[in-house]
Length: 167
Image (cartoon, rainbow, N blue to C red; front, side, top):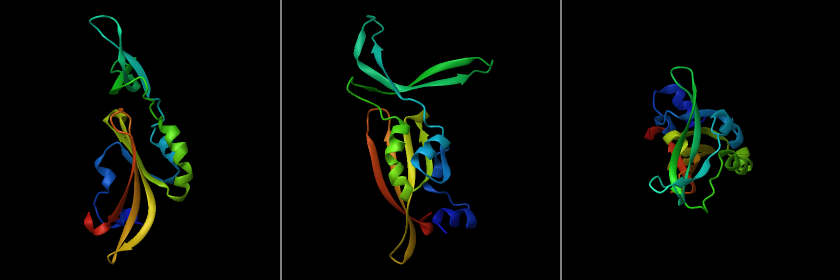
């Protein structure tokens, strides 16, 4: 039984990702499956910025996504949500591209949680890397994959041992 299963069975303690309402637990899946389950496969786009006072294009670009919403009157509206400003050389990593690159890894270390924050500007995946006894106590081991899609930070992967008693 993993730490996740023990916590769900014995307490109301929260897992690290449960503080983010846009983060969901998934049943040990590949990265591609997780991206689809979390509905994070939308395209990230880059658009050249227009200088309002001159009507000329800037050498900077906005990076973000189009959100298709339905307003309170039932009308569909499109909104561009800007995550950041980038140079012309910046190329955003699409969530499904990242997921396909991670799929071979997630065959061995499955995704157990995925989500985003800031309307999709950051994506987080928690990969279960097994269990280990550390200093006489059982720990679940996780790799955390984070992709900041604003152009300010790049893709990062970190490691986190999680002890049930610490929560």
